[in-house]
Amino acid sequence: MRSRPVRHAKTGTRWTVAVCTALAAGALSLSSPAGSVAEPMKRYQYWATSLARTVDDNILEGLYAAVARGAVGWLDVDAKYPIPQMKPGINLVLYHVGGNCYVGDDCDRFPSSEETGDRWGDKERAIDLTDPAARTIVVNDLIALVRKGDEIAPAGSVVGIHFDNVHRIDAQTIAAVFNEFLKAVEAAKTQGLISKSRQVGYVAKNNPRAFKAALDQGLLNAPPLYQINENATLSQDGALDRASQRAQEIGRQYCIPVFLKTFGSDAAYAVDQDDNETTVYVSEEMTHRMAEKPNISGAAWSPDEGRYRPTIFAEGSPLPQGRSPAGGCRED
Image (tube, rainbow, N blue to C red; front, side, top):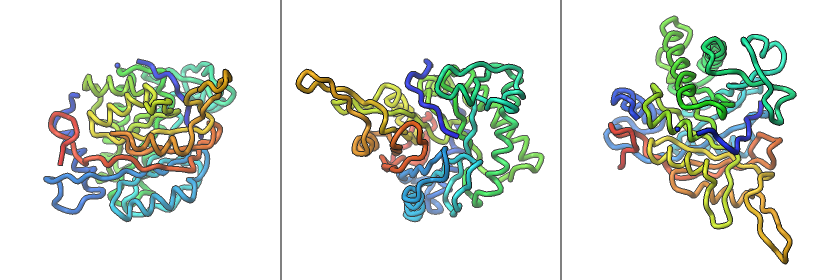
């Protein structure tokens, strides 16, 4: 299933020291030598993703190579397609349609749904995530995904969920969704449905304004594994679009990897040439320049919005593995 292009996200940490410390230790255990918790190293993040079919071979080989040299690897896929070989050190993230449902039996499970008003309207409908009954149905879906991921992922790897279509909701609703999900994960572990030792998390998808508000206001019981911002562009003067800058700020302030998704069919800017306006589209080279921006862990480029299978991943800035008691990145 494809993710949703979001150009205009809606508008918004106090985690406990215990939560921050646990997450920092968890991240370190994935890729750092034993005994390095006191001296956190900077690690690169490699994001291998495809939501339309299996991951591009070049990107998949890049993932294996990156993990072999000590980078943190994320395999972010839709479980309805074949999942590539999981090697030790690779974390598995599974896609869910999130705030939408699929027309037919899927949508029929919910109390109500409405037209999406976008290009996906013939296949999907929007659900009300402010409704506790709708959230319960979604959380049950997510637990089923985590159970599947728990069976597939190597021991010691994180299993996460990539929850789509949150661009319509605010910080409070975002917190309700993911806090309820994490509570359900703990219940499933107690029941023996998910390995007690398995680290489980979620991805922040688009809507960086609301996710940052949720983080700033201390609404989330745990921070996201990473933040994605789709339809990222670069202006003629080399500046990221506003939403990507907000995502960048999340990375800087909360020590969270930030991945940008770019499309060759997205217009970055227009220039006048001999009184004729020329549209400049996001290019592969432009994507590499986005990845070089501070607090960007990487950028993935797809030829067009209709193909959610990137053919290029540009590795970005390394991320200090660990959070300070204040909630930000801990420096080496």
